[in-house]
Length: 262
Image (cartoon, rainbow, N blue to C red; front, side, top):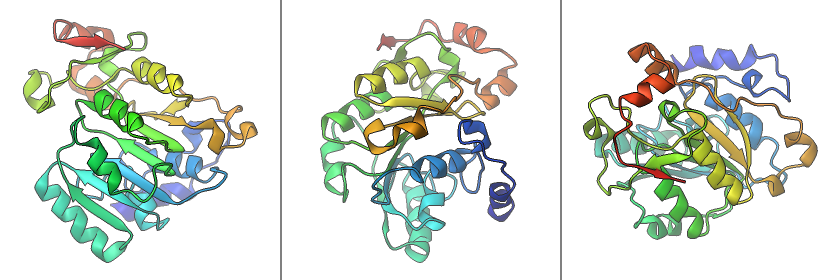
């Protein structure tokens, strides 16, 4: 499967202004590998280091391509014990520079996690925990995190215009929070407001409507990022297919849940 996906890398006709042409999937599920590769390749002074929170089994995630193909060092953090064990086993044979840590991340255990990192100004950081993502990100940056490239999952059901996230619950589980499993995470506008407040620049979302990408402009040449014309929003392809409803109608299913404005 991953060999077949990797073939898509060579089939791209890249337009440096158009992120959809960057997309390919070797390990990631939604074209993220290509977007991440294109952004990291343009960092002025790279340190070739990553952290991913919500790394699953170390294979289908946002950093396996960097670890296995590009040989970046980094940390894969996963709350599921079995998945983290698989990640550790795989990376022990593929890249000894990658550490797999099994911990359920909350907003309160962030400082300890960053103490394990070699860099706070790492090249790439990915966050996808299907829940308290905003609060974890907020505390990461308060603790000194400053990545060149940031990838975050957004909830397309929350729409294009609302700047909201879920109310913090320490042991949040989106599979139990609401029967639809649509109550989780952050809206794309919420993420944009948060990151722009930190001096970051929005780049694009992937075509499958799963991840949003931001960069620290100080780590890039301005003639690279100023020309980029990315997507500001895309519907989550899976949720659209599953419910046969656009985001505004899906939001009606969860509108009475506890949301917080950003």
